[in-house]
Image 1 (cartoon, rainbow, N blue to C red):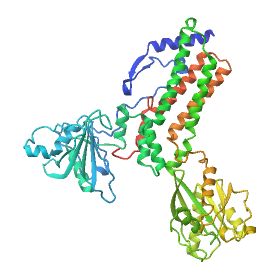
Image 2: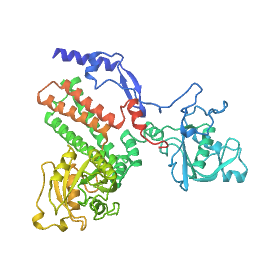
Image 3: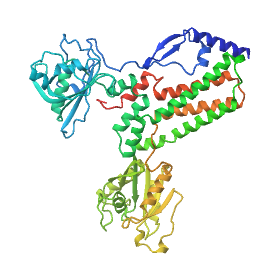
Image 4: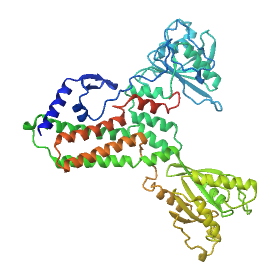
Length: 551
């Protein structure tokens, strides 16, 4: 006990003589003046440097443009020396898709403390032109659209635009933001982008607009990550989950859990410092709070697998002998005529794809060539591709002709494709089979067996239910989860769960309450990593590098 008291006194001494640090959102934390081993023992983890400014490539001349950046093809390699905004923090990017067929409208976005001044250099309002006050500075009213033109550094008109000013703090980044709505061709957009760079803005990095929104406190890190999810959503369920995350569904849970950890930590610390002046700690109440927090963490972890499927989708390979109804099954399932169907065995020579959705998860169905021994060169290539598709798929459906039943050829085929992946046996063509032929031919290698008819559509719903059950998606609500957690968040939730489990064991083993604070700090720090209240520059760089340029 004396050793514990000496540890605590050293820790208190270090914290009282700590140096204050101001981080994002003007939070004040303390940094010990010494890296004493005792402090490291009682602190939650080694401190990590927060990212206080967007990552940028800079050179000696103050330019922030990457060499070889494809966005600046045709742009000047060096801005004029008298350009006072050359190294400013105002960024610019094309925020609408380019490279495909042009849309009617494209948008170039500026953000930063000089956004209005940079935009004023290139934008000529029709109202100002009529009054012939072009020498006056542009003084836009926030959220009031203005019509005009964009001019280049030589005064030549490059496009006719609408300027949409969103002045701080009423903007996405909480900085001054100007959006120039141009004509949608890539030529128009790049000419406007070039004019903005000439006027002093620098090209934005991937995700830098959202990064600034995070650093300026408009979004926490979980909300920022959901912005990227929404942009890349492949289904309505994925979009709904991302929107719920942006609106703070998961953030509110993380904040609540962290505040509970800090509240418990405060109660314990108070009794360490003022033991004689406070009532005894209600251990049963503490355990009850820990159990409730653990349940909330477990509930959040349950969404991790669903999130992965929403982002990557599923690939389901339909394999089998020739002429067992694989193509017909794919057409009936996808409600399309993607695959050619004939009475001739071996009609399908290549992998045919069709898309469906299961419980909000995007699914790619792969109709493969019938697998058999053949001397036909083209069909042999198709068979090889079928076997490859089966190896790469997430789920394998082996179709068997219900009329013929299970054959020796099916056994040989099963040995070729058998793996540790989920496998479902489909007895197809039941509309042509007699009751005696519809015996359950389920083999041990299959997780489930289903009877189907591609002609009538019978059994397809049961097939979908079997897939959902095997993948653990049968517990997901029909509309999908309200929000989901990604891999990074999942890792920190596991860290929180383990810390709470260790805390529960410490209480059960009657370990002194000094040691309870270690686990509570660990849990609180893991939750702070999720929300971005305590996160390293390396983590932020990894997250925002996945974003598209302009978001």
